[in-house]
Every structure is written in C-alpha cells, then in structure tokens.
Image (cartoon, rainbow, N blue to C red):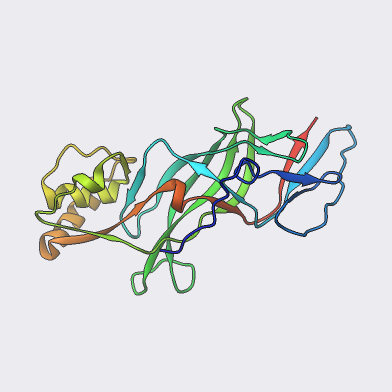
Length: 227
C-alpha cells in the first residue's frame, strides 16, 4: 500500500496557508496568490487544487466489498488556517461523500479488471450549518483482505464501520448475524450474494483506515467566503 506524506508538525499538520491577498497557497508549493474581491465587500479565499486535507472518522476502520458504493461522512481532522492563523475550515467540519468502486486501470469499475475503492467528497458542512460544495477525493486503495469460512474476524471487525455488501459477506461466511452495517442491503441482492459465496467459500474486502487512507485532495479550487 502506497504511503502518504502526513504533515505532523504544529504548522504543517494544521495545513497553514500563506495568503498574499485572497488566494491561499500552501507553504510547501510555489503557486502565486491571486486577489479576489466581491462587490459586497466580502472576501473570497481560495484554497487551490491539489491541496490535501486531513480527515478523521469515528471508527478506526471502514470495511467495504469490492464494487460496493457506500455513503460515508468524514470530518476535517485539524483546523485549516492561513498564515495569520485565521481558521478557514474548522476542525470537525463534516465531509459528506461516498466510497466508490474504481477500476485501477482506467478509473471506472467493471468486473474484468483489478478493483479499487476511493472516497469522493461532495460537500462540506460547517458547524454553523453552512454547506459548501467541494470536489475532492482520496487516493485509490486496491489492497484487500480475504475472508474465508472459519476465519476469525475479530481482528478485522474491531472498531469497524461496515458497508452492507461487506457485512453480508462476513455474516454468510462466518455465521455472525450481529454485524451492524452502514447501509441496508436488499433481499434479492443478499440472496444472489449468498449463492456466490456458498460456491466460493471466501471473499475479499477492503479494510480502510480513514486517517491513513482517506485524506482528500482537492480536484478543483475551493473558494471560501470570509466576511
């Protein structure tokens, strides 16, 4: 699994931003800042594309089945601040999105290629209730763990949130009927899955560790209003 550079110092972990006028530029890049002002005297601050924001989640792990799409809400792990220590995105701001299947070869999922999964962020929800559209996603994770009949899943399931498909897989293979899922799975889908598992007697799942695997990178500029 590819490692991610995580900024742990008091400045870097908070994603300190250098503002010359109104565009935020990370201290570790060389992109020039650009001024933007609105007619109503509010000030727009732009965090540019390719900046990575740290995330956290209430559980240590998230488990999903390959091919499964699962709604997920993460949170910003640290205050995102500018060089004057103004808070741009407060710690604890919700990140609404979903885990999506990815074809490792071309970015789209299909059954013929190696599968991966990534978190795609859609919206920020600030503690004030204000909502902000965001276009960002995590890196793609393709490493899986195998669940077989008779597997001791205690290590995998400890402090884990589980997608509906993965929960059904684990329940059918291990006989554990008390697995709580992130989302329910329909009866027909569960029946079809059971038929496959009875033949294979094993399945692979993604075991994601949000603070290591799901930090999000902006795919476009994030424009924030400051008054």
